[in-house]
Amino acid sequence: MYIIVVGGGKVGFYLTSVLKEEGHEVLLIEKDLGRYMALETKLEELVFHGDGSEVHTLEAAGAARADVVAAVTGRDEDNLVICQVAKKRFGVPRVIGRVSNPRNEGAFRALGIESTISGTRVIYSLIVHEVDAGELIPLLPLHRGNMTIVEVKLKADSPALGQLVRELALPKDSILISILRGDDILIPRGETKLRRDDTILALVKKGAEKALKEVLV
Image 1 (cartoon, rainbow, N blue to C red):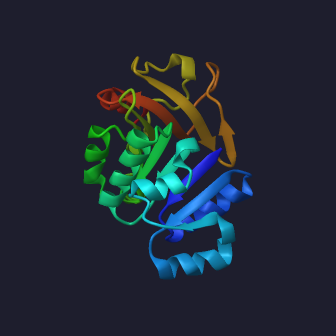
Image 2 (cartoon, rainbow, N blue to C red):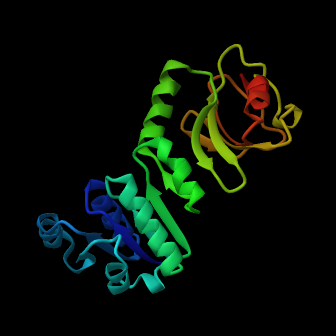
């Protein structure tokens, strides 16, 4: 794939480095001249100087043939504009926006940017996971289809302990994705028996979380 990353902070730098290692064609856009020059010593031709929110910069970077544009600057407003320009002006098939303030995710969705990642939300989920073990922890919202991937660790009082997956009265708008058991990752089958301390990843439609919680927690 040809991937354009906009924003040369730590996230953008490491993302570009990983994509290069995986064999993708990638270009990192950074508008600050000093930061650009520092990145050029490490990434050489993989870094481009310019403002990724401007049409002429994305055009020069080859956005018309890009498979993905990932806007990962530290400013939500800039990331929103970058995603909009890439999608509307250049027809990029997939645009991804970094969102620092989770409250801004609604604005991205309202403007058609469905792929967002919020580090704040992920860290919050990890904190809640440690504080409220046994609760359903939202890991990743999937706005297309209004679904969410959730995680739950089965405790000693879970009503699901000892049951086979096929015996669970799961709500119709949910499905188990995987079971983390020790160092193993299991694909749930009908005959899989649930054990204490199993960590379950499930896909559930918003509104059905309470019903899923009653079955597992």
